[in-house]
Image (cartoon, rainbow, N blue to C red; front, side, top):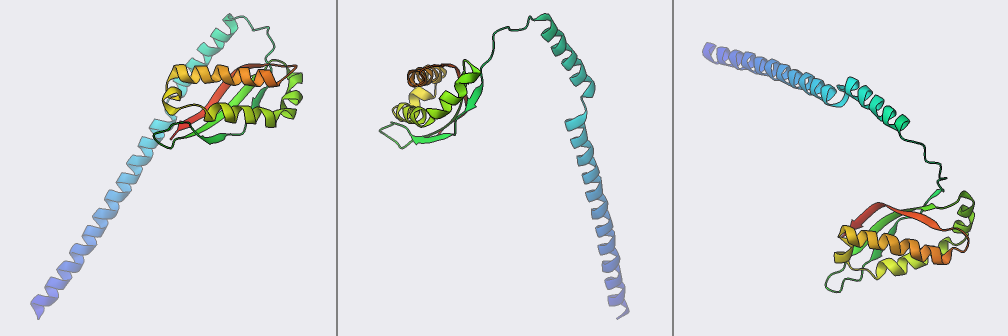
Length: 168
């Protein structure tokens, strides 16, 4: 009987020691992870400051662009089927358009349903293999600008930006 009590006391003492060691290792791991995260996220303040200075120097050296930049109009994202025959493919694209003059923004908004319709017809006629290449994306950009410029009477689209382009 005395031997059984000694064994249970040893097991209890051993269990407590294991718990203390485990808690210590866990605390050490958390502290190490915190230090690592701090160094990765916030350690380069001097490098950031020097790079900001160099960007400011470059901005001062380059002459200011005197050409007026028109407003950038954001279209709602398009989610549509592509014209692939072998497999069903989808395109999700977000487009921003830079107009040539600020006063043309109201004309653009008035013609927004016609513009969206023209872009839907254009984009659904494309196949995924042509849109996957850089040249294909550039061609679609030009076609988008051309279609919108046909609809707008006064102002024109200066640039087309893709802010999201996903083919699935």
